[in-house]
Image (cartoon, rainbow, N blue to C red; front, side, top):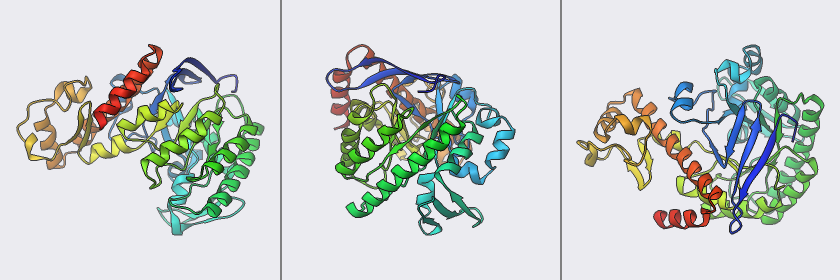
Length: 374
């Protein structure tokens, strides 16, 4: 890894391979395994940066290259101090390449060997993402960790289509990494993304070829695209052991609370997902004992907090009855309070996992969580 970045393994579970470590970045040290809240538009929906720090103690968040490229534009962000200055965020930021969003456009994009031609979902303007241009956009955004452009296939895909896509992803990664190294100034690092759909042979092939880049870290992409959850875990289990043990491993776009320890058990250090914030806005709370759907009538006069085991601002101050009232009344305050709780639950899970690895108790923790989720 570059001189500013360093990944330090502190403990590895001998039974499962779960890892605890420290990822050193220009904007702070990140304790791993870590969950990264998703701030698509340079903001976690409904949550102030103040609360991300004081209540949640989030060390790293994720922002989206595609959306920020379209609005307000990378040069605007660069001129205002990069994402850290623009959104007044003193801690680490990871930006994805925008590839997932572009491929989600379906009829609005066309894949070529050079990159992806697409039309903006905002106004229909035509743009081109190439491996090199997405690096340049992320350089302007000033994120601590950049992702290379990859091709993300929907599920299911044929082996033939997945092979062509995987080969293209590798070629794009090589081009992106060459461009990244030509312009590297030590303030950002860059992860390629292992693809291959749900085919173990293609996943292995992609990982082995990307290892030649000697990258700063590696991501596993193309999951959470409609496949059964067991397949996501299987693909992670195939890829993770192939990746360098001294570099961080990131699975993109996962998962539900009971899935987080499962990915860690397969050697994963970093995860992100929109589920805690999206579900919060829709009235779904995650708790130690399961899910609370706040619109249900049983909570109409319930004086208890959402989760008596949680010490977040929401649970310290408000009842289920009050939160139900806010949700049914359409009050925007609800989204803030609900998101604070759900993100705190996710981050607490990761802290519990990390502590259990450092204490040598992760297998027991994993067995207990599996029992609760059955």
